[in-house]
Length: 196
Image (cartoon, rainbow, N blue to C red):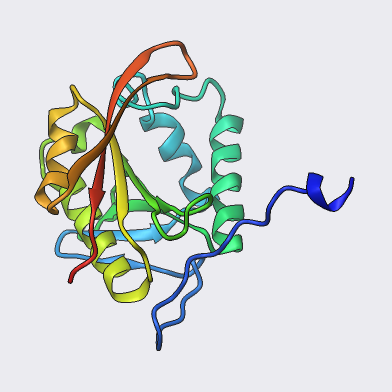
């Protein structure tokens, strides 16, 4: 393989001056939840709760086997090792209950990383998604150099659209997207700016 054929090396997140961090060690706490780095410890919870109902408006399909969940965790850990991905499990701060996952993916675009989140079904409707993404954005505002964050979401997923809108996000791109299992998503992508 010659130099032109090699894949470009992913660019890690850029820390703000005076800040340093390891993506593998970042933990974020807010009023009701904790964001902990993803690990094999949560494989059973992720496998059990990442269901067809949860993924209705998402690109990935639910895993058929727990090995698929372990592959996702391994992929996430590799991104955290490269310092271009933050992938968390969302934990109830009081009870320790698993609520879902969220993350910030800068693998292909470290200056415009993508936010993502999913919650298990019985955690819907309690504001955990809004709280998790707001806490992650606040952490990014303090620690990362970025131009803007993106938050892609299906147009019909009104509850999820309220998350970026609550952070001042504006739609800047729209597209139809075919999922791994053949569904068509009508995506709107929000741009969320850093504080001025």
